[in-house]
Length: 382
Length: 115
Image (cartoon, rainbow over all chains, first blue to last red; front, side, top):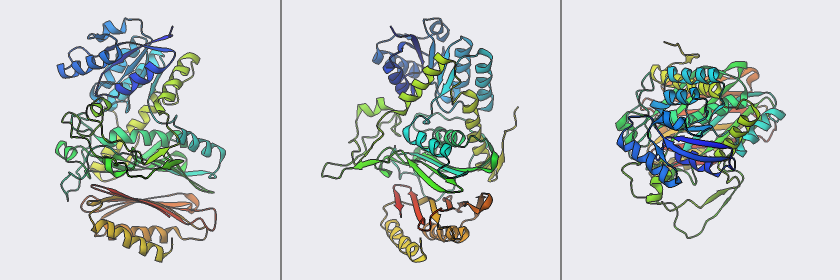
């Protein structure tokens, strides 16, 4: 009998698709139900019900009722705009919470999650890629002094998804001071969504906190992002405590722009040299006369190919040219680490406080890109 | 990463741009190492010239990070039409440590190069 009942807040076409699969595969977990806030749209409720059907579990339309079920863990993946209040409700119900990334879209929501976790004492963790083999290798290199004293890190993560080349030429993006709405059907703010991996790695690898952010955002690839006035690319330069610096490159640059899922790379620069760690190294490369990747038909409800559920409706020709040695889903080891923290009482490495620090860096990035100047942290509250 | 090497690189990348393989060049990311006796400023300047050549003009804004002891130099650059670059040059521990890792991201394709 599994020890932990897992409640899923959020359904299909959210990251719950991945969370649910990983929790269902964990030997100590069993999925209990899918739920959501009362009053979600019928569109969202139907997607929630769909995920429930796929896993053979009930959909409970009332979050409070669901939280009274035999549940110890909540996997929380509502849209960014609802993440703060949902996480707080789950924590206040005494549940351990596995949080989607980034933590939330406003400082008030971010601070609320940190406060609730502190008040309730539950175990909470935000998903990141720190458990991947290449990130772990980079951290071992830092700790063993292979580059001498660490002075700078570069981290990049670009999603190779969507059909690029549709954005009109010639216009520099004018960024907005505040992140605003993040979630749309056609697209999302990509620096917000993707750079969280990079900023968290920069924090985690250096052990330092960010003091200033300088940022540039762009509409480089996708017409959908340009129409919605959300960026598809972002680059940041971070000054950190201890005299360390970091650079970040993130975004969604199109499925055809990389032989696999997109560059995921860390460069460590120290007093004794530099080292690069890459999600696709080591790898094998295969060339033959099989057809290479081709775009699937455009899915009107998911043109950026964000969700596995929509990809399954019209599967693309898979990319087979590169095969990395590391094949494991980093979420599997991340969830395993979360369960271990619950059992041992150890604080997760990416707890709400750490996740909040990374999220605040990104929010500061938007302010920097809007003002075209360096922005100091912490950001003013209120 | 000699000047001859950079000039040949400039040409082959420009050919890819001219062929339309990348769409419009939008962002350049360079991480380079220079030998212990190399000059970081010179190496970064050479890479910046490549960026200007591929983007077709000079950047209008620069932001620089550098570490104590001249271990590395990073410059973020922005162009009038929104293109950008991050160029990082660090000092290698070995005399043969000169190397270049470059990614030129275009609106419809991306070019990768490692020396």
